Image 1 (cartoon, chains in turn brown, green):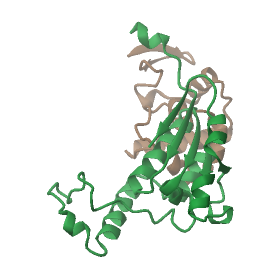
Image 2 (cartoon, chains in turn cyan, purple; image 1 turned 90 degrees about the horizontal axis):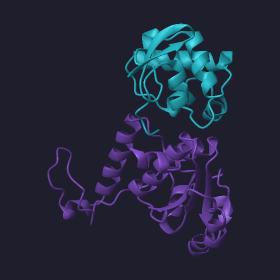
Image 3 (cartoon, chains in turn orange, green; image 1 turned 180 degrees about the vertical axis):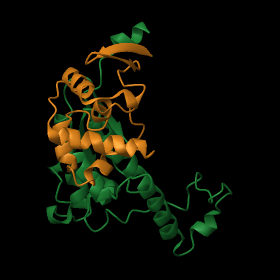
Length: 103
Length: 168
């Protein structure tokens, strides 16, 4: 665990840069993480992030299939929003732990 | 931890699936989908009985073997007698149960799983030789299939550094 200053706030992150405490997350922090991943966040991105955060809070194991069935984006669009990491990058930007599911 | 630093990340996986049981097909699909989700290119070649996974008529009705499968156990872990597995309907029942267990883990049916893989840029191919052998035509295959190839054509797609071929 390490401390990192993001968007002017000190947050706790793990070795891979995922936030340790999802409650420290802000939209500004999301933009900074996304920037490191070369992703420019749009409203659509934030809709996905909000969905993931809500599901995580509810204790659900996240899958791309779930996001695909959310009505926000289909899986193809999800890949376009978060290239090469539809679930791991979106989770990282959403400030929640790295997903443990294989789907 | 120095060795870890010297490793170059995997760039492409080419997976060959020659069997048509639920577990062989799903192992293939999970590996292919897992690859594209990690940003790794994935190409899958279905051959022999593996073709069932991309044949419209069969793809969502795959079975697991209840006879000759030593890992087969009753729910709860008791042994599953081979003779029981041979009774009519048992294999279908066990297979339906496996599919429902997977559904609970949000693992989709075969056609939807293939769509997830291709949505991420993965490519699905059928083996020409096996198609001829089973008298299958392109129209019998799942629509998202990228083509029918000889194994030579498939190998031609498996080039590049940090590429692995996996046979399930």
